[in-house]
Image (tube, rainbow, N blue to C red; front, side, top):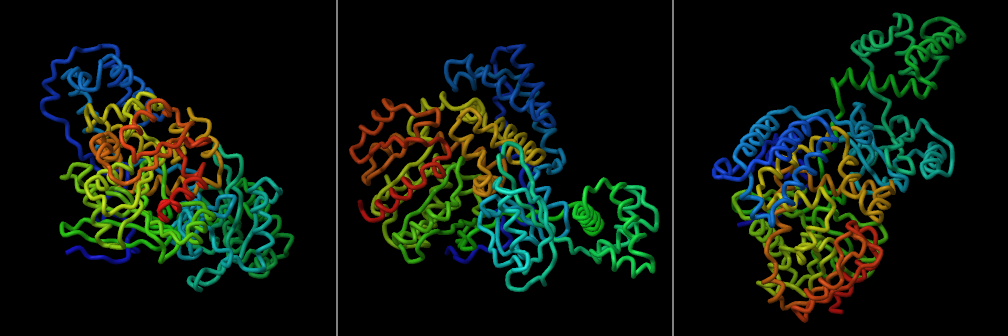
Length: 603
């Protein structure tokens, strides 16, 4: 029997203690026959592939060179099947060595600027987008500020005496003021932990035209280790170190002077000397630096970034007989008409606040299913990827038996919904497909941007090579931040780049990436395989309505081809989604929500 419960546990779908992301072991194995391949050696291209594969482990620019060399290799074959047969044994052996080396490398340090801001302190910390959504936090921050990545900060945690300073910072983050830092008093949600002081300052991130607001506790106990670190790092004398410690603990020059039995003028001079040696531009900067030193002495190196958890705090789980977990959450009206969202890899499930409000007002309950490998839903590597997704979907529907549902699939998330609706039409009122529709029109793969096109083709040639590429990419994201991926994914599509460049979208996009990346490169590779799963037969025999919202600015849209596909089944209606690209869920939210509401009403 499957067992159902809430999912507010450890926040991971992988086994306890399993390493995250780029530190996970590779799962897909090379096939023995690939090492006996009779493919002709292409000296120049093959050497480029080998060299760039090894370089991509540490060089972020080599990743794109590796992709480009593989694309040249694939383009020399008439189709992907011929490409698979044309790989030479020497090339495969060298790439297997690269795979073995990558599988034993340590995880790189996290240099994402938003993650660093919450990791480099041992106390509660949070990063806010200009509109107030939480873009990053640590575990202590989740508890103190009462929110998870992707949701709006509860302003009730800001002490009324600090609201003026907080509002001034928020205006500056939106380029409507010049306040750059402040000290705030925080009143934690539920009163735990006790109230504390926090530094607040603006953080600029690459590619963003507005700033983020960082709030970090500065009430971290000072230790002898902290004093030793401070003195060694900045060449402070014993007296200067002691003055710095007292200033950190009291935030008052007068109280430092009283504690040391000297004049205020003397302490002011010592503080100026400490600021000069530490290159702190202001007393607030000095307090921030001292808090960082105290934090590093306390925890050794980093704070603990919060693991992915449902930001809505509503996650439910069902445990299958084989021990696997299927997880989901919901938005809208708690007792509303049911719809289920099956997300694909480019988009998450968090909606803008006004969109959920519309669902609630319309009486719609939109379940957001974490497909196998996403969030806290575990995958079964022994199952074919479509069978795995169908098992999870059916377990969810059985656990939430509320009659026929509207199935909403973004990108390849439509594939399991289509397969299930074709087999069990009585379980569905209608289907809605949103976003990249290369799952219906396979010629669209050739119109994808270079990175996506190459990896989508490669997964049909050798999944183990794609998993190795994915792990290399995840290492770069760990080292350079999630923006490393987002910028490369969207820079050829102006509409998506505009959405990515809006810092108010950062919490939604970062949560979408975290939701997918929780279980690493294996889940990512299997998701590419799902996008290539056969759908023609299911599309032809579908007996429920399917609305296909096809973005016109994703670089893949082809009105004539799409119209021909829609004519194959009278229940399929294709609607061009003007002004939308891959991130359609956030670009045409109003139209998508209207379609979901209408479908649940039978319209």
